[in-house]
Image (cartoon, rainbow, N blue to C red):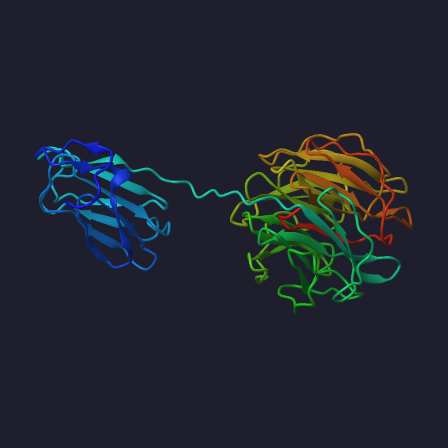
Length: 423
């Protein structure tokens, strides 16, 4: 064996063998269906395209060590098979089949003796759970001022709303928006007087792009949230009748075709992300006002209805806060005095809490976004027939602050989302 000796461990011949800290790591990523490995080395095994059979040395001495790592996290799809080449493996002859079939696994084996042969020192799975930095800024866009508009208002990392930016794209209202790609946003669907399915991407500097021809069924009053850390989902809405269909958005902002809905068809609901890559749709209008919710997995799969907690309402808004929780707020409970400013917090396990007495002006047709990494902001909306541009900040404990005099054109039926990981 050649190379620099480090962190030595015993070897029966008296020759010093190196431990993992001093292994010679292969410069080549193994991608073939077979590979022969040698003691004292570490190997990256990429099974993206195929299963790989790995042949161990035909002779070994006590303390010989080999490390194998799932380079592309694909062993769960295409396994590795260990051929112990005449030597025992954990006390079993090499006529036994030895397989490793878990994504993200690493295998550190050491040779003991002829009886037990190769023994795993470690066969750990490294979790693939990187946490993206939270968005720092927000954007409100589009809406109804008594006519449709496409103006936007950026929100700073300290929750300050900027003046109007001349709109890009088709003016419309009753649309939805969510973050995607970790630091960008997307506006989608809505009505111009007729339902549409077009979308507008928002860059990580808050610039709204031109219309993208829509995918999926045109509809108004849907909702949207980010999920999976870097993707988004549009769901529910009014296609002429209430629906529960969804459309997933990739981390590059591409909207997928319709997915048959799960849960009660409804519109005028709200949605937000929570937990680690999860989302929740809640409340809405089915022909009657409801308080049910539907959780969304980190893969974008919508769960069946969960019986609602809190006062049933519609035309409300929701946003994430505290990095892993969410808040629903404001809305219409029906009737001539049905506008409320109450809120319902959502835990990081997706449990909706009971009503919290509202702070600020009761209103409907409102939007909300996260900002500052761990806070939220409700903005705009209507009080009766009066359109507003006021806002209410939400701290990282979910406490809603008093009204802040609005900046920008007063409007309702708008949408909002977080963008940018830079303050």
